Image (tube, rainbow, N blue to C red; front, side):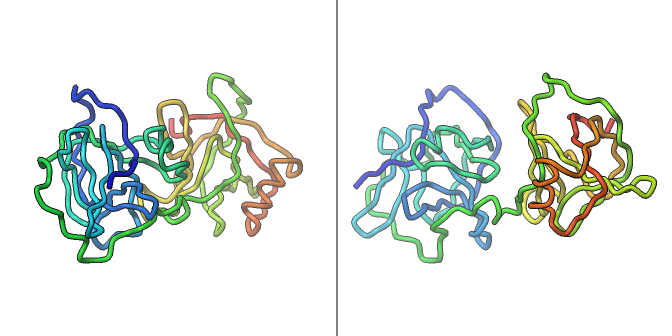
Length: 255
């Protein structure tokens, strides 16, 4: 029996060529995942080109291409050319929204021809769901939507960034404790991908915009400790009182 899996049309005309290795998994809904043995809770969405899922009579699941050639079998290792991209329609059209950081895309031919026999079902535990962004260490921070082309305030705040127990970024300068409200931002605990810090997403790039212990110079503007930004700070950083806030309009505070 065949079933839909996330996929995209590929004309076998090249693409990303990083090494994609791991084991093939499926969610309960039949969405494909890449996982490493011993790190089943860190699985990532996986998208094959021109792909269809197939369930055999013994319960084993696999992925084939439009010719019936075999990409991989649930629980078994695989290795292909491909890369890591932001979540996109190739995943969401079949499997819905994903709030994690990235999707693994394969740009390669199937490694095997059509299977002449039914492959065996997994003989060890396999993941059955994708981790959420929170599972992967991401968390909400005070932020706002900003495109650098819009410009913004140009006052300067310099100092060493420290993180509170809530994971919020502050700068202490001349006895004043200032909370940073960073653009297009989300925080990361540093226990999976990348180091601990706050990351900002701009067109074409995501950068670490606040790093614990780093000296920085932010362009932006001071804000009174009241209003919508202050309310968001109080909600997301309840154990992190500050004297005022600084709304950052800057995409490179490390210059």
